[in-house]
Figure 1 (cartoon, one colour):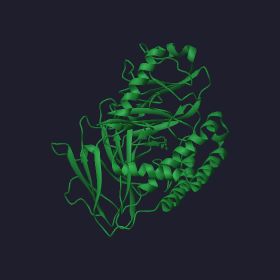
Figure 2 (cartoon, one colour):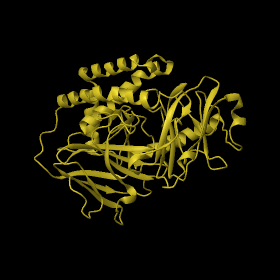
Figure 3 (spheres, rainbow, N blue to C red):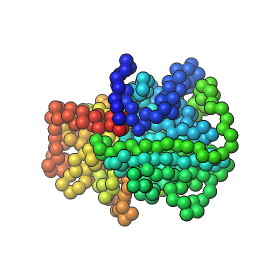
Figure 4 (cartoon, rainbow, N blue to C red):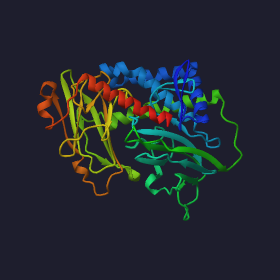
Length: 431
């Protein structure tokens, strides 16, 4: 793929840079600039200000960033939620330059930096095909998850909504050239391979995750969504209709995710990581917590990968928007981190860089949330061993509290780590 220069900066042309994506990102910018939507975003900021986290130093500082990031994601959901005119919208990601457009941050819900998220709405009154092409090395995992509705618009659950069914990359039949077709309709598979059954006579929401464990080599899967049969499609929604829908979704989703984190994260004490739990639909394990460390302190979290193909840990702001992860190590997985001699991984969370190779960088803040995910996990993995330890230590005692042979690096080596990380991340835009 190619990289081109324009007056707005570096623009990338690759698997994700489809014409529908470009149109969707342009619509997103129009909606964000309307007075109606700006007013809706301000209401979200006021909601956050009234929350207990809104009175903390980090919470106050990150309110505007978080509200605008969620609002951007919401517009993308509105744009791709017409099942009669379906499109795969890539979103819930970092800011980027895209074919002449500067696209803002769109993360929320502690989005996973290892994932490329694509979304669309489908209807049980229509039939669809997803036509894919794998460019090896493929993602560590690709998962197609059918939900009852957009996350944050249904009942409050540990998964952020109601899951219906899913299809995992291990269960997809692929041709020798890397191509595959997945059918979606309201009927059972009836011996069809690569099939997802969707509820009849209602709309559902599909989330596709490409999990890139090795950012420097693994490639996003090329995908095209085609509606193959169904009622005559109505006219695409106007900008005014999309803005109205965006406001409706934002009004639902902002309080939902605030309630979600208050129920599933902030009910526990700071600096405590909950025991891991199994996720539905074979999606491995997950857990989390929130941290609040003083200057001169660090929270050390030691994890056992349990044989998972992917183990990742990340930090977000108090509202669930990931801290900067392209140029900073606010997330690490087992490809990017260094293991302890016994195969576990110890991660260090502190505002200032303590020199530990496995430093999780909270973007200069003292607090935020932690999310941990084990994916493609062996069925007999001992879940009770997933969290080995979490403790607050003084930075002047860090070296003696970490396992023997823990790597400590210089400022120059840190810069090299960050540069390699950024270059590796940008591959997903260009390959």
